[in-house]
Length: 321
Image (tube, rainbow, N blue to C red):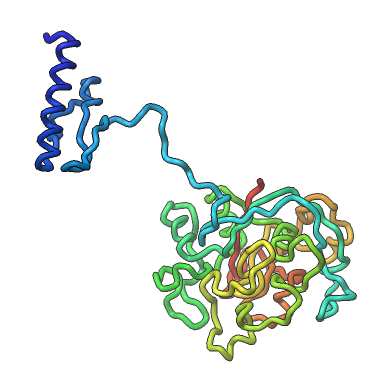
């Protein structure tokens, strides 16, 4: 058997010869020149490139290196999240300043306006899309939406044309299952409203106090613009919330985690409220393409049975910081 020192010298000499050949004519080293069972051969120098630009480097990567993992502090993508910082905000309706007086249908569930303090959390920048939901189905975790059509489209869910449109016809349980699969959860009602309203003042809509128009949101008045259905997520950047969350007014209503109670705000805890302990209905927030402009208000509350599935009902996810 050849001595280790001599063997290494022979290997290095062979490498130099091969290097000269590569630099002269671009010849590469055959795979058989290295042996994964021979520790010495794993560091056989090879030439990168050809001609005068070739450089010498080992084939093995230095011990301990790894590919960096993107973090959520990067620019959000259609599947990204936004960090909502810890702090206080005003939740509910200001009966003195809200353009609709807080009780357009005699409801009192948005009253009183009250201070809420939340810990930091992440929330999806966009509503969950058909493509994202399909990935959960492909993993064998999520159940299919109740229907594959939308209001004006015979083929909607599963159609690549609408991959980045909000998933619809999903019940509260289906939405919860999906968020858990992504390592997240449904946002609380308070988390949803802070992400929509911001921490300063009591703006009526996610974009401010300006009256809703079709450049800001997809809602009932936009039927005249031949919408009458969902829009691709993020189609109304001018209507973004103060934190940059999209479609928090219009497009589809969104499930949140809380049980619904008409009188909950009167007794809600100030710190990190999570809604009533029990209930019959779950809260939905944000308005929809088939609802009037008053449903787009940041304080507006809707609710439904946990098994409800509709063409104007979707969701987004959150997670604790």
